[in-house]
Structures are given as structure tokens and as C-alpha cells.
Image (cartoon, rainbow, N blue to C red; front, top):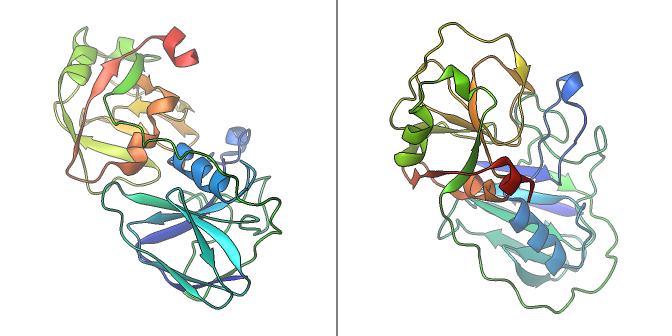
Length: 271
């Protein structure tokens, strides 16, 4: 068992998410910064599908009842039985990922151990006093060179599917101006403040399917980037979709910081 002694603003269990249940109204969930979660698992010898802890702004204190390797932000730590591990707030970014050799072995829900914060499907949020089961380690932590952290940059965005609801220059406005991350951003979406995106069609759409990375534009004209816990459907038009390889940046950008968009193509997004 891993015993949780203290937590910060939000700690959840996450894996690679539950795919294929949007028709039932169940969001995807999963680690917001997928590359960081994958690196933490790799460091301790876990499989890519093993569950980790996603920690918002640090504050997590753990105690293990068994000696195990743990990884925090890609660094391996040997934690003897009974010792404590404290996860400090990150120097940059918002979210840290803690992997335990053997994985966090809570019961899966609909095939995933991820916590969805929109409908609270999956494990409950991790609170002080929570006891988390862990699996058996599969292998010794491998030796490898830790890759350099990726450099943040403009979010590549593909136009559509509802860009025809906007004026001909709205996409240029989106890609030509900085947007500031608002404080009410969360795992559902990144809310942005900046130039409004003018529409040429009035009214609203019937609710239609939404995808990870969709840039939805509510009546305010300020875009929202849908993240892992986004609703499966929505009625506001989507002007574009962020390239999946750039979504990790949305997990780490802090309120008050700026982001930019850059036009991409469907071919580039398919990689």
C-alpha cells in the first residue's frame, strides 16, 4: 500500500484514459501531460498502461508500507518501507507525475483507472488518509538517458470543423494574437482571454461530438481548448483542433501565462 498523508490542490489517479465510451457520455480522462506520465512509468520499469498519480502544484506526501522505486517528474527515488516522500511544487508548470513500481492498482472502471473530474467516473480524488494498492514490480528500473524536456511553443491547430461559422479572418486572429490562460482553467478545458473570434453565423449548433483538443468558441468569442475531461458533446462551434503532440503544453501552462496558436494542416496532424 501507499498511504497518502497530505495533498495539495488536486491529486488524481490517471492512466492513458478510457477510450470508446463517448457514446455513453463518459469522457476520455487520462493524464493531461501524457509524455510526462509515460516517462515516469518508464523510469520505474512499469508498462505504459500503468496508473500514476497526477499532482497539481505539489503538496503530496506519501508513505509506503513496502520498499519501492518511485519516479517524480522522471527522476527515480528509492523509498524504503515506512519512509515518506514529499512532492514539492514544480519550479515551472503545474502538474507532476508520480509513478510507483508495479503501478497504482486501484480497481479499473470501464477499463481504465483514470479519474474523470467532469462526471467523477473512476477512482475518487486522492485525499489525505487514502490508501492506494500497488501492483508487483515487473522489472528493475532500466538504465537510459532521460530525454531533454520538450520546448514549449505555439500550439499547432488545424482549422475546422466549424470554421465556416466565423468570419474569414477569425482564424488569422486566433493565430496572430497571444491569449492569456484564465484562472478557472482545469482538466476539462483551458479557458483563454484575448481577442474575440468574430462569427458570421448567428444561433447555436445542435449538440455534436467533441474531440480532445477541440478549440470551442462560446458566445464571448474567447476560445476554450478541450482537454482530457471534456464533455463528449457540445453546442458551440469548434474553429479548430490542436495537434495531439502539443496538448501536453496545456497541462503545464499556468494561469496568467500566454500561449499562441499556429495554423497546421490535417496531414501534419495525422503525422
